[in-house]
Length: 152
Image (cartoon, rainbow, N blue to C red):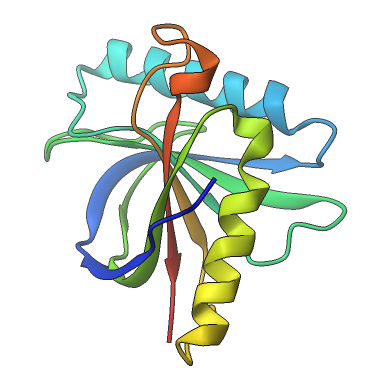
């Protein structure tokens, strides 16, 4: 798949967040559990969604690492015991969209890294994977995942 990559500025975003330690072996189950916890918290507290969910990944994802699962919300939401309310920073990112199964998303990261090298940019923070459609509502080959990688 060829990836169209663009540099763009993203704005800070208010979100309910759930931090989760993971390994490559546990990541899928723990992401599902984190999203369920956020949805349950929002239902209990009346939080209203303000955009598609996303996950923040550290630049180094070897061995065990911590992800932050995020659900954008409108002002007035509140955190709780395991769920925080945070403003996720914006900034300049290299951005692309991966179409298809999540297990093929590594190709998009390779394309983004090549783009950075070719354009004299370097990674500068946590990568944001934004899930633009629902895996329960579309076939796996139609999944859309935007990847925004902060650059300097």
